[in-house]
Image (tube, rainbow, N blue to C red; front, side, top):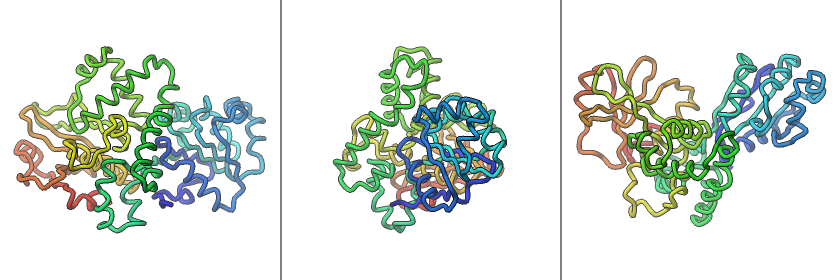
Length: 374
């Protein structure tokens, strides 16, 4: 059992909807069930997959919806994105029963945010749940033990079932099952998705470009699709918690790149499963990219859980000078160069140093990375 960072008892509020977003299989249902099992309040737990429940909550029938919740202190809806116009149903509940606690989970921010956005303005709080973060594992391991497991995280990722599973063979099987049966399920259910095969091919192309600048025109050419469709597919993949984009930071210099993105995978194990590469680090040529993907996502997890409000970018100019990760926080700039092994050069690029004189710069390696993400 892995203790998650979120404590729902501290997040729930009467008269507010708590929306728990995140990919499939990261533990949203487990987190919800653990809270409900401990509470002394009377609760009703339902699923958005239940047709009867869906018909009630999207009916806009005040009497029907209020009768559904009568006598309960908590209404919890798992997989709420399956219910059309769920936001209006939740709005009816909390507007008419101000003492009610409502919790909804969803594995597609695209659908759930669309359906809850306007109706729940000022009436909701969101919690984004990731695959297991290193900061969460400090409850079970010390930093020395976590460093010993770094190779496993870079190969198999950080999904709860993967971390708890001891067998490497079973880890591989589970990851392939995640890719084939769970992670793409929501995407294929979205309207107007004409070519699931092209979507998978797009993901595989991105898997070989983590940490690199991605050209939409090149992707479109390789996929034999128009650029607008590629852009739409990337947007769907990001809103379905499979990939994460970073834009280029640009403020002072004319030659700074700002029109291309880098793409990382929410979980590096999923990336490896997509291209069926589970070989050990000493037999790989992509260790540096795996480490970069791992650290970027772990930093995002850390900032999210710690309520560190910051914007993340990469920086690069046409002269080829670059910094892997730029963090803008509280009006200050922090540059982080991510290297699996200690680099020879320890100073920031000259153009960056001259343009952003008040910024800070640090090199993150396999020796000091835990200080960066825990």
